[in-house]
Image (cartoon, rainbow, N blue to C red; front, side):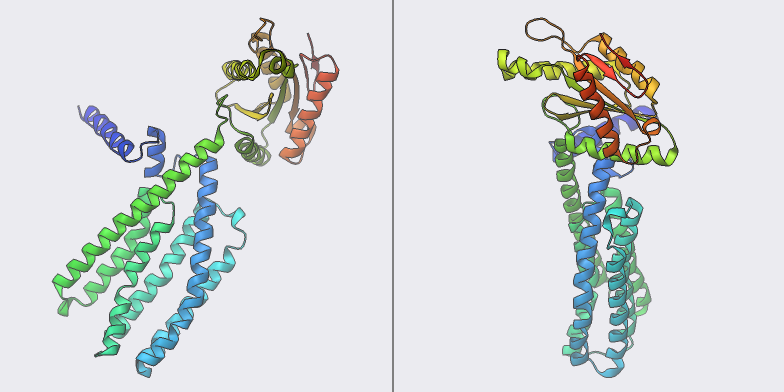
Length: 395
């Protein structure tokens, strides 16, 4: 009974989110809630965006933070501004160190992006707590009191700043929580003289700002998910696009190199495809391409990745597959057929196979060049055949 109720609640929750983000599937809605199931392409782009925005904000703060010291010196007596200026210089050094650590954004992992964003938020949080404790020791009046009140608004600025990052719901709450706790800690430190109505009103406003920032971050992430989805797939055949295929191949090559497992790459070029377009029109050619893609997908494993490389060219990425296994699998694809032309004759392909370990390639581009070269050998050898590192299979 409990499992059934939990399942119904889960469906209702996803349906509610789907009404808010109407262009998204149930799986994509889950991507908005937590980051654990993000595909590599989305994760890579999101990390890049988070890091670039952390770097931009850190540069801005590294410039503005020391400049604000001039106002502290002008507004406060030495016993107050000495501590504030010293802390500002420490904060400036922290922002500068963060900028320097993010010079090579391409090498940063999702965990590294979390650390960068956490450090960016930690610096002003620490400064807020210090300034709050430091100025509470003095009786401020007039202009000094006005400037002192301004420091109390720092958490509002920080929470509003979360809106510029494409964060999931879990991440937004996780990064907002320390800042909200800092506000609570500041109130506890002032407990004997705490103005409860003022604190309650300001904390409620902080919660509202947190909610708005979280929604803004989710909206950015939702837009990014839709863009990645559109960029990933070829609209006609449903295969991965050239760009996303290259990124996936790069990732699989890295995984294969690190793990020592084989990685096979198959380059398929449909034979005499130009004749189909010339004789029967482009609509017929599109149907041939779509049918060929469906036939290939239907004959390979779920974990194999089919990419429309361009025109009538397809690339099949086969992780954990050696040259012999790839040859057997592609021979099975050939025998199952790639569909028919409009005149009823079977569609055939010239196929080249390359494997990272057997061919001793040092990059995915070299592996692609080898598969491409062998595909042209298949064409020169009479088409409708496979050329690989082990053997050649023909009609």
